[in-house]
Image (tube, rainbow, N blue to C red; front, side):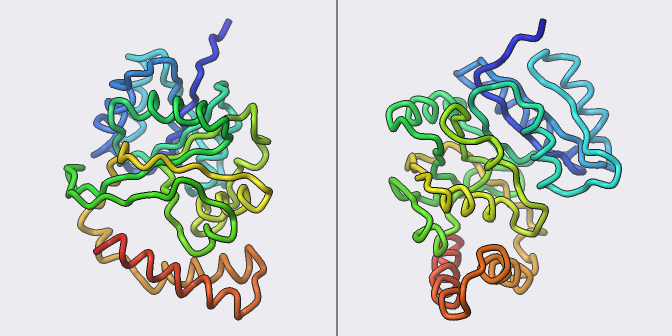
Length: 253
């Protein structure tokens, strides 16, 4: 009989062989040990699969899943993990980010104290080796839908949900660009409040190649979320987009 863990951690994996062992170790080092890690192979072409199989064989709390043929991308991978999650609490962790050892313990305690369905934390930018750069992104104590439209401050590797308090169907991510932001907006639009724990409990690894990523493409993704996903008017979209751009720039300075 399969034992259910308290926290299910969903990790999409695509060609992350260089980072997997370190990221998984940051989960295994958690002071809160009652978790399961669902690693979802998204058609990797490097050694990721071999590493995942080894890690799963060594730790019974790790489960290895795969996206189906014809499905690809982080939304599909996260949704595959979410559908197979056994825990009451659901967390996401990208395959190159790191958690502080007390991340789960502190965030669970915070979630309980707030009697909330949705929590997120501050985080620190890391370099290519996930060494903290000292640049910490602070978060507000609470975030509701109108405010969230202008601040994409909720970082995927920091979130935690109580599925006894939120409909699991809302946690499914749409298969579009910036799927995580779209999911947070949909949850908040449904009337939930996201509570921010202003302590950096996650390292957001930023490889050098990501620093020169296509900024125009990022701008286009967010604009399309306003216009197509949220159905906002041109004026409202422009208003939120302006503040989004300001906040996004300040986070990276």
